[in-house]
Amino acid sequence: MPTLFIDPGKLAHELQLERAVLADDVVNGSVEQWQEIATVWAHIEPAGAGTVFYGGQGLAETTHRITLRGRDDLKSGMRLRKGTRIFRLVTIHDPDETGRYLVCRAREEGL
Image: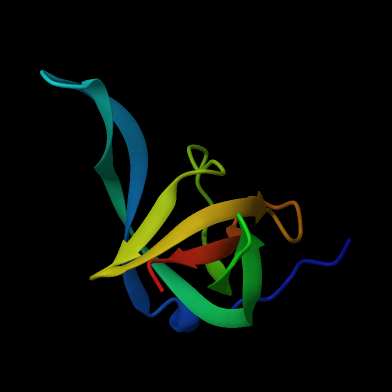
């Protein structure tokens, strides 16, 4: 398989990588909180927009393709944050199997 060329200069967006952790809550037992584990540089590219239906209600959904340098600790369900924008990672793959870069499909939350 040929090596995929990705211009590292396109990794121009500084994002915070976060993972969910359970924290004790006096009232509810435990709550999900987000813990920042790294700052990464990435290329964000809009992939699609549409409407999804949950419980008979239409909700806007925007997806993105996010490219970043390879990491061993990246998993689906984590999220990337850029200021107030939050991108939930849906899928992660290594496009040329070299471990140099990862391409993530992400769903933007809070729209």
